[in-house]
Length: 229
Image (cartoon, rainbow, N blue to C red; front, side, top):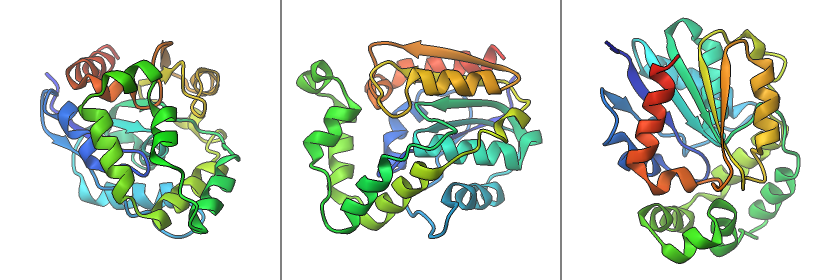
């Protein structure tokens, strides 16, 4: 019997709302910490992990998407004894330097057009079909804090936990999207090879936010990964 709580961490510039439809289909208690306010400083992923560690008790099935995946790595490194399973969805433990220029543009008022961002997050077919996750992502882009988005992108640009992730001894499931140009299957494959107990699940047809289009299926995928470990 699994007595662990699910902890779901969202990406940037999204909010906990992106996870709520999936949370409704998960068995057991679910917590979705709010990571929208990104701390100033060189290591906001670690700062957020430290805050979350004080807010959540007990054993955890931990899931992180995108920027939230890096926060999840930091949390797992911080409290490894409380992590029953770790799932990293479309994220990486190495820098993505190109995001520094995007962060600089956002700070100067040049926020990427919503359609361009959505085209990175979903496939053309998915965008044409529409769906609740696309509507939610579009809404969250419209209300996103430019400052927090820029801070998160700057952090992703330099984030490098590759020398520390081999210390993670809990079972890890890595879920990659074939159409993700940032958290590529190759980058996630490199992460898999650094981890002592990890499996990589690649979905060639997915883009960065494609998993959220079918919350029930995503919940079953998360549960299967956690229970199989």
